[in-house]
Image (tube, rainbow, N blue to C red; front, side, top):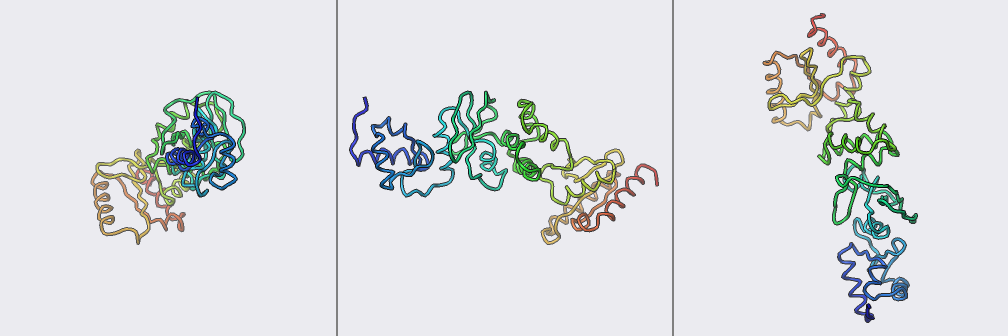
Length: 307
């Protein structure tokens, strides 16, 4: 049986719990230490504790540190709960900011609605799709992309995939495996469509490179391979059958002597291999697309022996 605790002792006990949980304490944790409902209510009225969610409080001045609301949401939902959807995507840097309502998924049991939360109930989850982050269980980056695919805008979803690939949060294979394990589900077809569209997203491809891919597709030209390994270099666009390479340079003022030198070395290596080479600036792609397409189409025709 839990004995009574003095007022100062109660505050010290609460402070010890809060120190491990970003200022957050749960009512059940306090009951287990002999701190009853009346003692909790008195501290809330006195401003020593602040309600975050039902049965979950912040101890102290009320200023919540990063991820405290998310910690409180998991504590409120109880066992087999994890942060998911937009909350998980934001934690992994796939979305720009945390949503106003914390998104939590609960596995294999019912969990009633909570104000300030979106609670998702699921039957099961593959353990490979969960990750620890700062002491919290969170959907893996690849699973988070699938979770938001039903509700995110096309721009948000493409950005999330790009950020995940560029930041090495997941590999294309990991994303495809999450898709395969969870079909059918909301958003799976939409995400699969983006994965299958080379003009939508690729490994941290720049705005200019994406724009050129769309130009090529819309013009009905053969689609190139992208980000192709070539010795110690990587080719932006490669038409293997025609033996044509196209490179797109970034902003001139961001390109120092080292970058220019590497470009020249790449050009020499490509031509030494008997391949054709075209190089455009980002401004060419964005401001003079007809010229760019005419040059690519002409080079492809020549390399095929048609001109």
